[in-house]
Length: 623
Image (tube, rainbow, N blue to C red):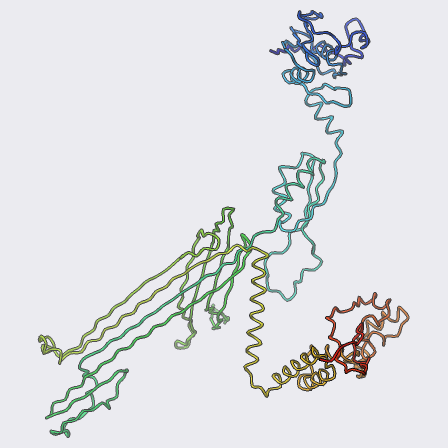
């Protein structure tokens, strides 16, 4: 039990174990060698030390103590003696304490007294400084040194980081950020960014070391690479139209005269019809019948499959289609203004993903597939559009497919034309009527599949798809006529590579020259010829223009070297042949290249050194 009686008597600082203040003046503590607390034998009875204090040693390093309305400074003196520690208190530490503590260490006793007395302490070396909580705060504040540190951000913006770190700053801390960068990709012919900050977002924070350490830990958790989502939308539209027509067609009799048919029996199928099908006419003894039969089926399927890769929480949009322009006229009291607007049709996907930690993805999504046209109506031009679209906010598991919209619509029409009264006669009325059936069925299904990108694996798939596109391009070119210039040049290059692998350098050079005669700008053939000959492709040409290399001329003039060393035709192909000082000034580095196969030589002969690339010894064997 601890009880503190406070009073407003002004005290002085107490240094227990060394010196302390008393009403009678300065009293010096007894020498520690005369009666050290740690060497006192365990006692079975309590000892009254005066001042309402009773204490005894219960075991080595622990003791019992009984404070009864004891002045807190006297309590400190006893604890200092028992623990053989130095305690000093500020003049603001005053009051009385009542407590009974059994078998406690010095640290436990001191913290118990201070906790319930409302005071704090700081231990420096072998001295314990007791003070008020405010004094401790002021002391720590005076001793703490503020530092300034810059934090570079890669993924989180400086504005967002500033908002999140505000609770961590101390009252004395300050924070500055780089300016907010421009958002979006607005079209402009004049704005190019100017001298805006072009590096990462930066936070400059001035605060205490412990706060800076905590800020550093938080930023390591927040400033991480955001996830990306690949969204695939599938829009399937099916339209089935089925028309059936059967019966007597009375319309085709219009304009046909039967007065010359007589009694000749005949069958005619040469009537002109407005639609398809077949019409058969029978004439016999002035009786004519025309039978018309038609079945028309139209089945239309539209499949749109847009894909879009979006960073988490960012808006993405893809549009593949047409933009048809039309004029609109705005008329005021005095002026008529015409503007051009566009009707956008095609496949469009707008999405914003939100990735959860549980593998689910929330999508704000709007897939759309439309078709339309612009047609004149009188003196005006009006756009018309047919569209299938849906706007939704859905939750989908990573890699799974879900239906977010659909439509099934069926329209059936049954029409009948007949001769009045006669067409209603059972069975016999069939001869005097015709029927037309029409069925239209529309089906629309919209599917969504999101996929959280796993960077390494999915990038490998992207590289494979890029190779597939290159295979498609080459396959398309191989479908051209064999005698075309491009096909012939490619054939010559293929033969040159085969000859090079066989060590037949002369034949490879001959095929390269044939390829360049058809395609002079084929870069692969030019570089291969340079490597085989050891000379630059431009070495035999004259200088093209004196004004073209003004900057090179200025830099070479400054170094006191002739400009011909760095410009064609004098510029060597091999960067090692350029002066080291010139290479450093112009940033010239040697181009990494795969070594050429050595030339094939016959036994007893030596290869020509002029056809060998640098670093090859020319040794080889007959194959």
